[in-house]
Image (cartoon, rainbow, N blue to C red; front, side):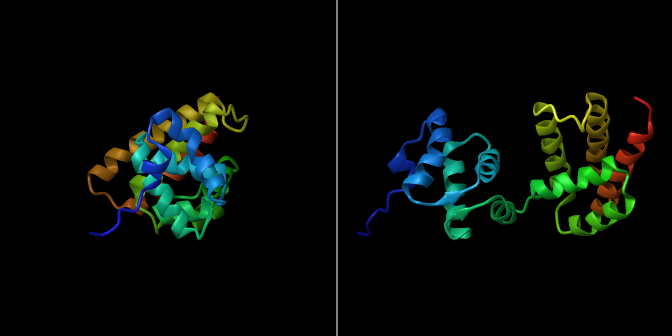
Length: 178
């Protein structure tokens, strides 16, 4: 019989509240460096499941060669890096159409629906952080624009077109008086 290798789930336990605290503890015990933002992304991608989150953490450790960072985790999961979204929304707020066109080229490498979901999560974080760059009225306008984009994707509309339309509608939303 082959030996059974214990998973981190078996070694460190599996209760949901404990898992959130255990991720950094596990990494510290195993001398693995990490960025807290990377752990937050893994937790979100685990959809509340401690087992899935720890499985993703295992994969991230291997994929990142023992330094779990945001860039590596987002690349591993195929999601947009939060720093990229920060730059994208800065361009939107500054109405910088040239930069937005450049960012749209980068976004062609991602599934449009996933980008829209990541943008929604980014804006939610900005709301919860009470970021002064994003007034509640602007956040509400941006959310409506993102919500309007989803049905277009359901109609098999070209994803790159939907993303372009979405971003330029956000610029237009900045022109309306608050």
